[in-house]
Image (cartoon, one colour):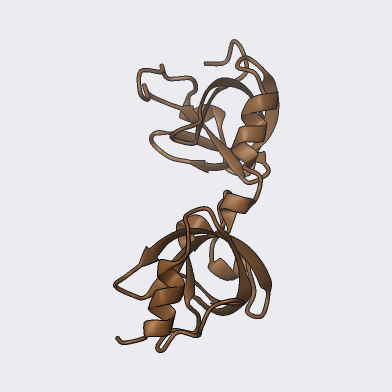
Length: 182
């Protein structure tokens, strides 16, 4: 695809630069953004693209849970995708990370309440609020011992749990049932 003006614009961008634009289209795989300062894209609805992973720090079901067509957005430039001739963008990079805030205020050993979202063979996933889930493992996970039993957790039930480990790089929160229950 020949688009010399678009190529020159994209090549001049620097990682970390903040770009603004309008959400032009929402697809199941991500969001196209018509950039304010750049030329249009010859094929796609916008020269900027936000993948699902870069939309939000918190879980969501569909991209339109996060943004709407016509919405104004500010995004961080990640890279120039030379194959698709588009700017890869991150919306979440400019927003506070709820896991970081949780880890800063929630010391290991703190007891808190949450709602059991799902019970699987690996453990119970507990909604801690702010879009964060923690896992009460029913068997050893990455060297951490089992911390609960399946019979102690029902989906939709409010439970008391204890923070046992927060892994910032992998974005995992490990929990146990309240002291004395596991």
